[in-house]
Image 1: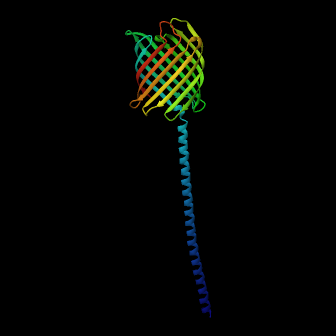
Image 2 (image 1 turned 180 degrees about the vertical axis):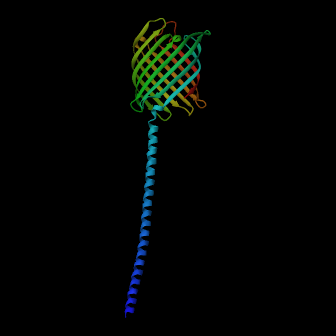
Image 3 (image 1 turned 30 degrees about the vertical axis):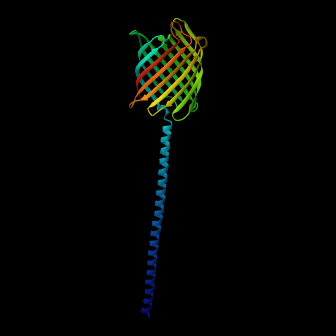
Length: 288
């Protein structure tokens, strides 16, 4: 009897052990499967986040680069130096060496400064007679892409045209018309003061007004045409009218050919000077 009871209890124990063993194995497999799935989900989420953050970082970097490019106006400089020959017709027939140079740069995003210097070594009857000097500073403040204010200062010494010296100080406004990517029209003007000393006459000073019209056209990738007209209305001092055609041809790398033709007419000059003078020049230049 005891033998049967012990055998029965042993069978129950074996069944219980087998049951819990199978249950524990199922729980372990289920836990492993769940853990694997959870890890897969986490990996997918992490990969998605990394991809998203990577794209966001690239977009931010691109925007930063564009922002830097957009606001790199302070580094925009244009420096050109040139030397060549000039022929002057008017009161005197002159052939001379000349140098025409200018510098343009942006002091701030809206404030542009331009300096120009024209210097001529002129001879008459194969002897050094006089030196012509023309220097100018132009200050432009752009209220918008088209509309700007200006403050111009110029000094000229031209003995062969009848001037010991003359200076202009002009304060005004201007407007630019962008007809297309190649052609720009510029108009400006304003009041100012003129000081001058002419050959055979006393020192003069008075109020003036300046009107300007210009055309800039890029004919090809290497050829640019500039045409300008301006007048100085001086009342009792007399008026000055000037028209200049400039052709800028890019040669190789930084070198360029500069051809210009200028006509100047003054309504009030001393004898024996003629009221008009023309200047034709051909220069070879280097741009920085």
